[in-house]
Image (cartoon, rainbow, N blue to C red):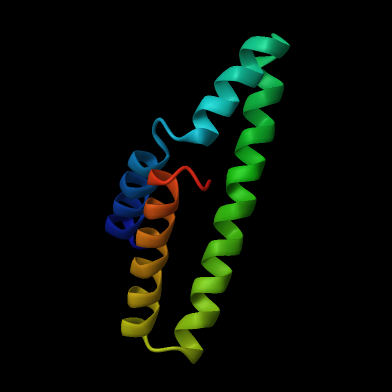
Length: 90
């Protein structure tokens, strides 16, 4: 078990998710439903599922596509999403 990798992954994901649309949606659903435990379970399952998909795709890509290309494509997608958000396209 690589505890350093676990800690750094936790820190990156935690900071990336802090204050994003997902967290705001969870707050809104929890406040409107008055059932925070149900919202927590649903949100946790959703995040775990999305993370599992990301890990599986990343592991599969690493066997087919060189890491340098994956990083460049990911960076380009982040830039495109940022521009789309700035222009209110999403």
